[in-house]
Amino acid sequence: MTVPSSLLPEFDQEMKTTRRVLERVPSEKAEWRPHPKSFPIGHLAQLLASMPGWITNAVRETRLDLSKGAGYSFEKTETLLDQFDKNVQSAREALAGASESDFTVQWSLTMGDRVLASMPRGEVVRQTISHLSHHRGQMTVYLRLLDIPVPCVYGPTADEKW
Image (cartoon, rainbow, N blue to C red):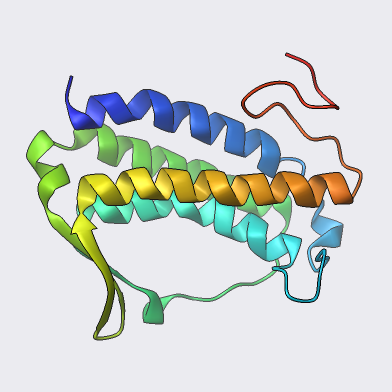
């Protein structure tokens, strides 16, 4: 089994679960945050919607320059779900079309000319899936604090059984 084919089942499951969580984000509470130092829920949702696109970048490019990012805005959940679906489709196509050797190519995260991190694409993809799962976990806490039912993630929740 190749690296790309071994990643696809995990990718598919994590994206399916992430979409279920993202669907529950209330657009009307986009600016809500659990603490003054915390990200607003609308920005966290925007991050979740965009992160699959980072996988596309990692597979098809050799760097991501954070200084060129658009920043955060407050978007309706429906808009973010459309963005998420497009990013998931693009990332899945990139993973499915990648060769084994594509995953050994060095990739860098930069801020302008400053290299923040550099590693093989395969590690970037794996870390991005983990990173997305981390932020999805944050979102489930936000949902709980807003008394919004939390969907199953890796098993049942107090709100949703198998």
